[in-house]
Image 1: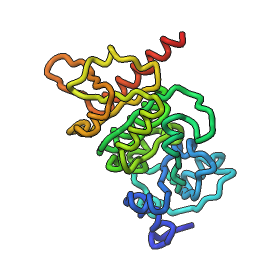
Image 2: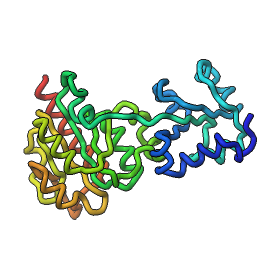
Image 3: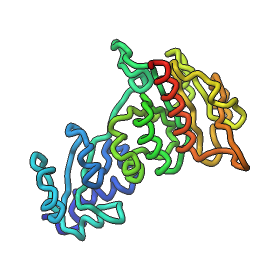
Length: 266
């Protein structure tokens, strides 16, 4: 049993919890909790740390998994949650190409789906991003493109908010968002900017390949990215409300896309 935080494995877990640069460098991230542990694809699992109490309760979950026992005190130092459940995993980061995220297929493969994409620019709130990822799975979003300055999807708060959807919704961070938009357009996908100056989104056709741009929580989309969109759309508002929070707006627009596509196929 590991009983000291000076243990190198423990030190590395703490680094991965606290540092996005370490997560990028090592291409690893941390997953905590029993439910999320069950969502991890086995091929991505690197290390598992568990307390004796958790092992006693969930021994079947760990029957075919190698693990390290850690003392409750050490586990608390490793954990990023207020109520630690006693199980923590080091996991390999996922890897998708822009083509795979946008079209659903790698080069030379046949595209099997009509793209339903979200492009996120500069989101900073971990809860917002995690909520969007979870919602994206529910709404049938086929892929997500994220600007490099968007909050790290492997942040532990984001991972918890996704409730496992992070393993099932293809995503990619891009260095040049404009280049990514150009590629998206080249695939015959219509681009929509969520913008206060847009037309009501109910008037838009999302039944074909579509990509919706969602901007920063405080400032929205940059003028440069807005200008690249083929259409500007807005969610109509009553009262004094000007706009919705980024995750809520993404949800409303994504489910309209799903509604239209289900109607077309019924």
